[in-house]
Image (cartoon, rainbow, N blue to C red):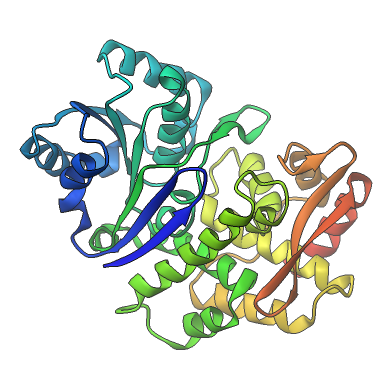
Length: 355
C-alpha cells in the first residue's frame, strides 16, 4: 500500500493499493470510533458490484449501514438530488457522530462531499473512489459541488474527507471507455508538472504501474492543495483543460463524458497557447500523441462562440476577466488571466487544430 498524507485544514491519508475496500470498516472505526451508523451513497452501477460486500464489511465492525443509490449520470449532481439526499439522511436519523461513505466515481463523490459539508453543518465522510478519474483527481483535495442549470459545479464547498481509500482492484471492473476518462486526468497531471509521467504513459505499460501512477498524481495534487487549499491562486492550475472542457460538457447536455471533455479542453487551450507563442509546439505534439495513444478525442464540432458563451459561467471568472491554465513547456503550466472579450478569440485559435 502507498500512503499519501494531505495536510490541509483537516489532515488525512490517501491510501492506494490492492484490497483496501476490505479495510473500510476497520478504517471507519479507527477514524470515527463514536460512529454508530454509516450512510453509504453509491450509484446503480457500482451498487450492483460492491454495495452488498461493503454493507457486510461495515456490519462486521458493528456499524449500522444504510444505503442510498442514485442514477449513474451527471444529472444526479443536481439541486433536487442534493435535497433528496439531505432529507433521506434526516429520516435515517444520521447524527454528527456518524459518517457518510462515498462509494463510486466523481458524481457520487462530489454529491456526497457537498452533502456531508452541509448536513447538520458538517459530518465526516470517507471517499472510496471506484474510477481512475476519481482516484487521481476528484476524491482528493476537498472540492465538493453540485451543478446548476447555468453550469457545472457552481454550488459547492471546500470540505476535506477523513480518508480516501483507492482500491486498485476495482479498476479491473471498469469499462475501457470509463478507464480512458481517468487517463485524461492523468495526462493533465503530466502536462502540469511531470514530463517523466508523460514519457511513462507513452512508453511504458500501464499494467503493474497503476499504483505508482495514481500516487504520482495524488502527490502532485497534494502539494498544490497544501499551498492553496481554497483555490485562490496556484490550485487553479488544476483547472487545465477544464474551462473549455466544462463548456463542452454543458453544450452537449452532459452527453460527452467528463474525461473526454477535459481531453478536448486541453487540446483547445494548448493550441491557443501555441498560436500565441506562450508554449512550444512540442507541447501540443506530445499531447496529441498521448490522446491518440489512449484513443481519447481531440476534435469537437462546437463553435468558438458556443463554447465562449458556456465558459462565461466558469468559476474562475472574476468580473471581466477569466483565469486559465496554459502549458508553457513540457510538464509545466502557468496561469494566465485574460479579458473575457479575448476568450472567444483564444478558443477560436484553439479550435483550428481540433476540427
